[in-house]
Length: 75
Image (tube, rainbow, N blue to C red; front, side, top):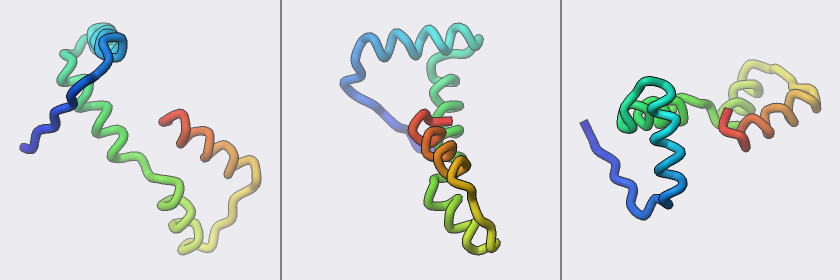
């Protein structure tokens, strides 16, 4: 299985991630693997719009704004 190494992580970011991992009952590695999987599995706005075009669907203005906000927040 491939590995990813992230260097120069700010101390406050590392501390916050450790706290989140601990709160979820996971090691930092387990927590980060889950977060990376969640990020990788999430469709991008471009993918969502292309799928809608293929399916012939349309979006309301509010749905587009909601999708943009979700993408920016990382939901």
